[in-house]
Image (tube, rainbow, N blue to C red; front, top):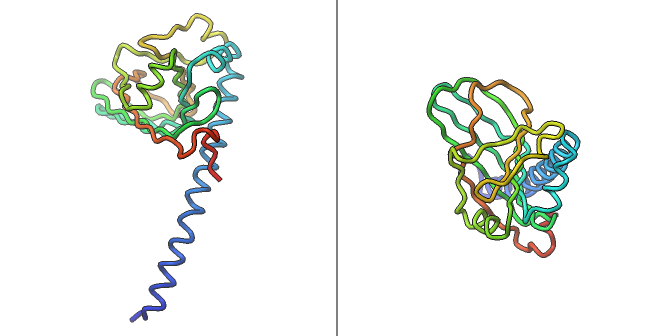
Length: 186
């Protein structure tokens, strides 16, 4: 039987290791986001105009998707405004129909104006079948246009899916405590 002292040490050690784990996760996510932004710009240099001229954007470095008739996808990322991270975001998706397989892809959502960005931050943006993603490739963004206030680009990282819609994506937004300091967590 454990003594009270042993239980207290277990509790203290548990709390002490939880914060570094969160910091490590955030550092890895931030690194993945920087790499993903560089990958998009390298894959299609004309995407630079979207990064520079949009009201803001959300970057999801690794969206995991799997399906066998019913599909599900999930990913986490960051929202940027004026080039600075202002909050964390999560995406979930459920789809039904002809689909089979699994894949991991990266996704960037550009917001045409402050109104659309604010709606996203308030949780009022949900993608329907009317919004489609453009697969990032050399020059693919040159003719891309905003639809319903957003432009969406994806890059497949691994896997294969017999379905490519982004309809049904739902998002959550968690602002950083001090967005004025670019949301940097240390």
